[in-house]
Image (cartoon, rainbow, N blue to C red):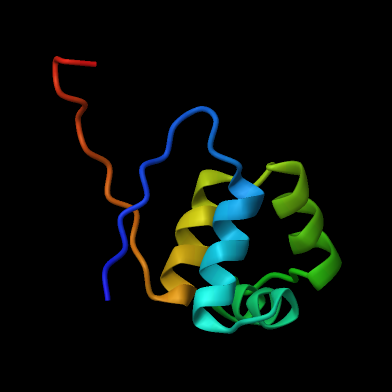
Length: 82
């Protein structure tokens, strides 16, 4: 099922990731486990939670989170009206 979320500079990454986690019924601990498994490096639930809360996720980590949750980021050019 597709969901469209318009993201701008005011978008709270914490709220966005939490929304996606709730929709998929996945805990931060499970997310961290899957991130570690796919990336081959350790992601603790505390580290992932801190990154989400601080809004300090790397773009590559956000892409990874979307992949784990079954979403993809789709970047579109803004129309000339903006």
